Amino acid sequence: MYPIWAFLILGRFIKANGLEIGIRGGMEMELQVKHLCKRYGRKEALCNVSFTLQKGIYGLLGENGAGKSTLMRMMATVDFPTKGEIQYNGKDIFAMDEEYRGLIGYMPQNYSVYPGFTARDFLEYMGVLKGIPKDRLESRISEVLEFVNLSDVAGKKVKTFSGGMKRRIGIAQAIINEPEILIFDEPTAGLDPTERIRFSNIISDMGKDKIVLLSTHIVSDIEAIANEIVVMKKGNILKTGNVNEIVRSVKGQVWETVVSHEVYQKLRMERAVIHLKQMGKEVQVRFVGEQYPGVENYLAEPTLEDYYIFAGGASK
Image (cartoon, rainbow, N blue to C red; front, side, top):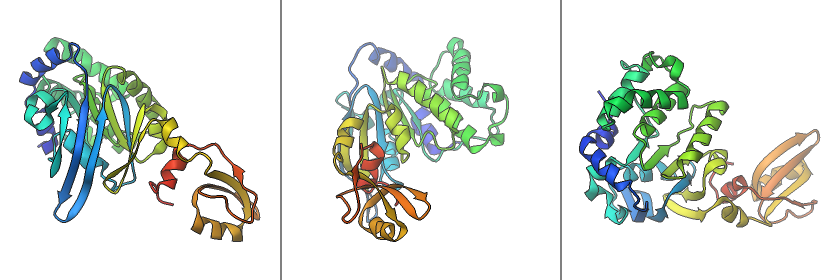
């Protein structure tokens, strides 16, 4: 009836909710990933991944297949590492079991909802599982429905929803219990530009007193709201830091030029091209790397997208 992740993350929250209240009284929040590895048969999905998260918004950036979803599933205790550990405030999250699961909100990338439920039915069910008091649950459901812009379809069955609407109800169930840790895997997939801006604004507020980790391969989503960024490639951590720190690593290596179509065909084979614009018989090109010989190169101000493509994080 429900996907396995829902029962693993949500299935036993009454006891955990009491612990949650005590923990939120003032303890520091620190989520540590230590030398994490994950293998599926002979395939190594993650290799020696380590980083520490505290209060704030963290962006997990990487191409499809970089290991983002695998990492997040383990941070949500849906999957288990082959090696390494994950600790919250010094405790192993798998040993914490219900206590840890009562502190997180998780929305997986491949999200499914029982289609017979209306939006309100589904959130009521999830709220009960998460131990939200009855006198608070109704108003909380209304709040999250408004946040994800689904108030006007609260009584409609989820099976009638578009892909983007189902994504939004997934976001709603993740935040309904006001968790300490939020884990969103590709949360803006299927959302239109207005909804993405709305999501970014609310997440920015949440980062003041929560650990928020969201993954995406869309650079602009991360750049807009993340305090810190973790860049992944082929199961490894490529770089960590804030936007300015990461962008500085390609300073002096981003160029723009205008060349003929013939020269462009050679340039694109030898440099990481960020953008191009057709200009009749010529092409305006932005690229990362060394200056290209034989043409006028104009130094450009670098962006996060420049670094991402230079590091091989996106398809050319």
